[in-house]
Every structure is written in C-alpha cells, then in structure tokens.
Image (cartoon, rainbow, N blue to C red; front, side, top):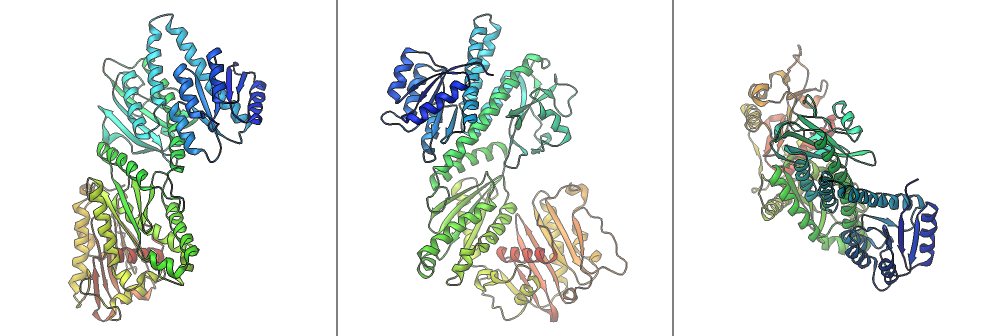
Amino acid sequence: MAAPGRILVADDERFFRELFREVLRSAGHDVRTGASAAEALELLSREHFDLLLTDVVMPGMDGVALVREARRRDPDLEAVAITGHDDVRLAVQAMKAGCADFLTKPVDKDELVSVCEKALARVRLRREHSQLLSENQEFARSHALYRQGLQIMGTLDGERLQDLALSVLARVSDAQGAALWIADERGALALRGYRGLVDRAALPARIDPKDPQWAARLAQPVPTAAPGAKDPSVAFVVPLLADEEPVGVALLEGRARGRFEADHHAAALTVADFTAIAVKNARRFQALERIGLRDRDTGAYNLAYFIDYAGKEFYKARRYTRAFSLVVVSIDNVEQMRKEGGRELYRRAMRDVVSAVGRVVRDADILAKVSESEYYVLLPETDYFGALMFLRRAAEEIRREESIRELEHKVPVLLSMGASTFPKDGEDFDELLHWARARVQEQRGSLLRRLHLSDVPASAFWELADLLLSENARIPESSPSTRVPSDPELLAAAQRECAREIARDPRARGLLYVGARGDIAAAPVLAELPTVDSAGRASDPTVRVYLLGPRGPEPVRIGHPLVTEVYVDGDPRFAGHEFVLFLSEHSAYGLLAGPEGRTFHTSDVPLVDALVSKLQTLYDLQPL
C-alpha cells in the first residue's frame, strides 16, 4: 500500500464529499472536507495538506479560483480537478491553473484512488528532493533537474513541449546532438524534432515500436546504446514510457566533453520520464480544448482554432523542412439544397458531410467550418499528391452518406474541393488559400462537373473513356481538354514525356498508367524511364508505373523497379483502345485513343483523377 497522505476535498455536494472521504480513508489517507472554496481556504490556512481534490463548479469561488489561490499559498500543493460532462472548458482552465490531473463524474473509485496516489507520490518525490538538497551540493543538480522537469510537465502545447524537452535533454546530458520521436495516432513513433550535430538523413522518419531493433530499447526505462553505436557512452537512446507504453524515444549523441557517463544517462532518463507524463497530459488537454472549440451543429472546429493550429503547423514545417496541405471544401448550392431539400434534411446532410470527412482525416488533421458553404482541412505532413488522395477518399465518403443520396433525389449536391501544399504553392496562409480556392474553381469548370460525369459508376472506366472519345460529349472551348485527329506518334510521345517528367523530379510522388494494344514490353515509356542509379528508387515507393495490356507471344520480364506489369489477356477492349494517364504532385495528363482513330487528351486534374480512380477500381490496382 502507498504511504498515506493528507488530502483536502472541496465539493458543495454532500454526497460526493462523503463518498470521496470514505473511499480515500479506506485507502489509508487522512481526509478533511470543505463544502465550499471558502471553507477549503480556511482549512488550508490552519493545516498542511499534500493534495487538494476539488470540484470545478461550486457556488461563489469556483474550483479554478480555489486551485489558483491554494497554489499561490503553497506552490508544492498538488491539485486534482473533478468535473461533470458539461464542464469541459472549466476543466481546461483548472489544468492551466495548476491541476496535474482531472476526473469526470461519476468517478470510478479505483481511478480516484489511483490518481490521488500518483499525485501524492509526486509530493513524496518533492520531499525526498528537499531532504537531499539539504545534505550536500550534489543533490542541488537533482533539484535543478526536477525544476526543469516541472517546467516540461507544465507545458501543455505539444510543439513547445517537444522543443523544450529536446533542449533540456541535450543540456542535462551535455549532448551535442539530440532527436525526439513521439507516438502518432497509429502508435508509430514519428520524428518530431532534432537539434545540434545530428545527421538528419540518418534519422528515420518513423520508428515501429515492434521492430526488433527497437522493441528491446523501448521495453524498459533504461538508457541503451543507440542503433549503430558500440556502447551508450558514445550515443544512447532513452524511452518515454507512460503506463509502461512507449509514447516516444529520444536519441542523444556526441557529448561535448569526453563520453557519456552514468550520471548523464540517469539525468536524461529522469527528463524522459517527465516528458512522457507531459506528452500524455498535453494530449488530454488538447482533446479537452478541442471539445469546446467545435461548431454546435456540425462538430467541425471553429475558424479561430483552425488559424491558431495552422500557425503552429507553419512554424513546424519551416523549422523541420516538412510539407503540409490545406484543403478547401465548398458546397456550391447550399441555398438551393436548403430550399428544395427542406431544413431538416439539409441540416442532417451538412452534419453528415462533416462526419464523412471526419472518417477520412487522421487524429492530427483539423477540419474547420468557415461558413455554411465552406470548410477548411489542414493535413500535417501531407504532400500535394497525398492531398489529392485525400480529396478522392473524402468525396467517396460523402457520396456514401444516406442523407446525401436522399437529398440528391430532390436537388443536386454540388461539391467542389481543392488543395494546396506548403511550400510548393506558397509559404504563408494567404498564398495557400489562394491556390486551394483556385483549384476549387478548376474543379467547378472541369468536364467532370459540366458533363455530370461524376455519376458514372466507380468501375466504369471504359464507359467513361468511350463517352469522352465520342462526339456526344460536347467539349467547351475554354476546357483544358480536346479531341484531336489520329496521330500514331502522339501516344508514344506522351509516354516518353511522362517518363521524362518522372526523371526531372525523382522525389515527387506520382502514378503513370499505360494501356497498350500490343506487347507491353515494347511500350515507348520504358526507353525514357530513369535508371535505378540515377533515380535512386530501388526501394522507393514514391512513383509507380503500371503497364496494362495483353501478354506477348514470348513474355519478357521487364525488371524495372518502377514498373508493374498488369496482363489483361482476353479483355477485348484493349484491342481497340490505348491510353496514358499520369497523375503527380506537379501535373496531370490523360490521353485516350479509341477505335476509328478517335483521340482525346486532357490536363483537367479532376477528370484525370476520375479516370485513374475508375481504372484502379476496375482492375483492382492499389493507389499509391
């Protein structure tokens, strides 16, 4: 059993005061109660307590003000807030006032005891440090270390926390280089920051905690030699463990004077422990904060929170040379939808639009409502190609919603989306917003919208291709699409140019699909694709080339690392058609050649993406 502590309970409801007193007394603690903040302060003036357990909502002075005043009198007093389901914002304020944790009514008895005993353990730790400080100068360093740990634990902003933890870790271990990985929503450890003399190229962007190289290093709270280092005196890693689960890992290397010793390892491990607790608290705080910043009708975040979050993302992207994307989602005919669909169906459809996009976004992504007809989505660490894939998945999810399908029986739902990427499209918010809205406008003018081609079934690639090749689909003069006379060289030239585009930027993500009537091993694209040495892509999945067509009389294994052969023997449609479809971070292009010399080509991004999507669905080709 943990050592007993002195606990003061403040709650205006007698039932909860007595409940908390009995539960905590049963756990061996000395408990006093007060029915108001004034009573609690009176008790604090006469007696010493280790822990204040207070309700947030009370008549007169509330729990937030009580915590602030109590900690002003006794900075070492631990505090835990108790809140009802509707008191989320006050709980956030209580954490800012100095509460180390919070509980939600009705409180689970075991959780109450566990949270209080953890807080009391911190009190005991402070007392132990105070005793050691009075004995000799050596422990003064422990005091300084502890204070830095408290500073880390008091930081609730994730980005500032990561920067502060890196700085403190490097300082206490005298390391010239440091890097920090923090767990993402999938449990992988993502690189969040680095400083000093580290080889950035050698730092993995993500670490799988189950990887045998890392599993043992993350299992126990002990410093171990870094991967590639002979021993921990040269370079070492310390895990960040919360409830025995890894929430991060820090790398420290290159001590400024000599080698790392046991006291450096111990200091870094202490800071790592503080950081692990702080990471967990920061995430809980962020979750609470977000609850109070959502639009009541749709559940999307408000614009003020989005702008604040975007500012932090700009800072992070500039500092660590990362990409992120901004998406604008526009519902172009909301007034018509409200008028013809009815108010209730319209409101349900708007909630379902947000819900559908919410199923596509990750935990780190932010969806915000700007107006009735416009939403923003921020996609951290997402390049432009990734944003295009997001747009496709979001549109598919929205169209699956029952309310949207019901509404479309009465009125069309005109949905337009566009994306822009930092730093490709701009280095401030206004530039990104300009290009995202320009691409929204591009989608509105796309043949996909003008000819209602989005209604074509998901696997109807050939039906869509034949429609575009036929004269039945009228192409406006302002469209980036056209039909041209038959030219045998055009298809070969298009293949070669797409291959050159891949070679020009080896790091850009993209997909190239080539459909051939004859032997795919003779496709002109193969002659222009970059070699493995020049592209450096033997194991790089950033671009893929798919060659579709019949198997030749003597099939030849192409063997290029970028190329995947897709044999479609027996599919009669390849006898009369050929195509080139290219979609990348920088460009989009489509060329269709059909029977009787009909040829269609386009740089209409939404249309090319639709053709690629339907081809992938038809032949079960996985997107990048």
